[in-house]
Length: 432
Image (cartoon, rainbow, N blue to C red):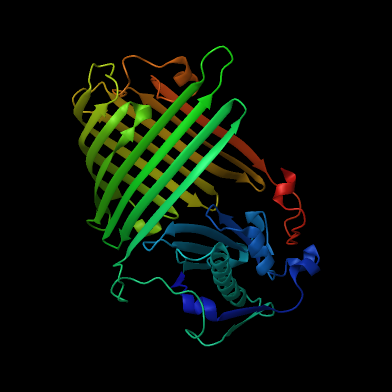
């Protein structure tokens, strides 16, 4: 497998030119003489219309069975706040055995167009290399106008490569106000968030703080106007250390005010350990992890609980196993988790969740997700219970022992697999 990292200088220097007619000018039979590419992507900025417009010398097919090249498109957040786009190219049919991998780094200050252009240039480079390797020598030429010379975004670097005054720390501050209403109804929500993070190959640290204020007004015909205000805040700190190739240690501290959970103040400190059965570098395509956490939690309640507590410190522990796969046949993940209070073994919670998107055969996919939970740990519930308004508007967490949600569907695709024409007239907004 050929693997390389696409740097900013290389992206800026590469110039790609299609030779001969474009796919849109060719018949379906003639188009089959060009590389057929199927792209499988769930990540942000996977703008297939933009890719088809900018790279018009290959066939972007909609059925992976007829593709010469299968493109996996994934991304992971970078330590500096940008993104690392991982592009894996796998040959099919006559190109079976061809594999190539590209990493495209972007900066947190890049606009969406800048990110898209960098991705397009990276894909173009890889597709041009595939076309040459497979004998499509009359389709494209590659020219380089001086590597490392000229414009282009900066590449991502590590702390020992530059004099970084921020020492790899990144900060984010955001806030927004949402409000809507009618003659007899008003909803208003205010959110502010702050975060700071630092990521190195050995350490991962993150600090967050936020405020959420919500106001609900409902005018009623025969009763006084109902007004509810909830002002919550939260703060958390996370530190993760790469103990060994497959082992990681973590420590999380969390504090806040959660009115919906009857908690005027809460504080938790939770050490944890995680084991990865596959290398962490393969997480975009497959992962199997297990982690265990244990620690104390302090809660000061707004109203006395069903157990008669106004405040308490309780120890609890949690365990989770998660398996995720993303292959040419589709993608699937399943996780099982459980938590329990140590002072009373009957107070526990168990969760089972799964997602699947599976290709049955050409043009037919089934997809779905489901989650079920067995709940026996709601020690925070207020003894007085909920008013009818709080229950109908779901303002406070209600007493429950079992929760579930699911979504399943079928996707059928048929028709032309060679139509690469892009027509932007009457955009998506016209179709409601």
